[in-house]
Length: 276
Ligand code: PMP
Image 1 (cartoon, rainbow, N blue to C red):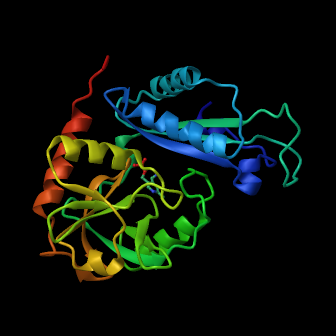
Image 2: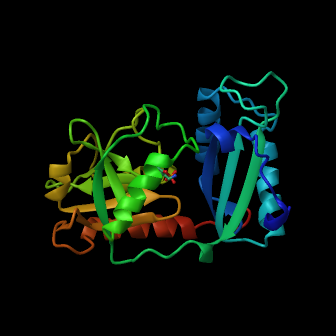
């Protein structure tokens, strides 16, 4: 449907309870980037919430390709959302037979604001999200409030810290530092962060490059005195963080390791062509 003619039912459980999940997948030259990882995460999210969909991964791929084709998009992003479906408002799951509601949107690259290539600022906040943020749920209110607060501090991203002052992740990205020993550091996977697909890809590219990597927790204090910092997400790619809470990181400009990682990821995106 054209966007102007598509409507959500007022009793969609996504709308009333944020009872649903989503994915954002990058598209380059018509290829869905790291699609297996995105589908694995989508089905993980659905399983954890006991949402059973009638569409196989193959069917979803066909539908996505169709939406991309109808919008004439070769380079951009796909937004896919699945809610538990439409039912009279009641917290408990609806009777069996309710069909989950599927939305697929496609946007060209120009719709995503280009980030400052010289790096962005980050604002830190206590992580006040629920205990299962490994599920990519559409329930994003704490993330919305955090990013709004960050924007008020002229920052692109908010980095959450846990009760022990360790950074968990960003409101819409994963968090990384290059520590004093020049190692890449990012928090290990668990129920307290989203398993970012860009995080996964960055680790693989860095490993292939022979960089030293540590998946361990790092504190706000360590981040402030790190050599470099950066964030990863499907829409931002690899993006240098040059300021945290107003303090310059390292020399205050994009560092050597971040520049390398950024280039590796860009080359990876550019390596795709139709048929690959
Ligand atoms: N963490 C959170 C909370 C996010 O919303 C996102 C972006 N969806 C990420 C991390 C990065 O994930 P990905 O690399 O798969 O886009």
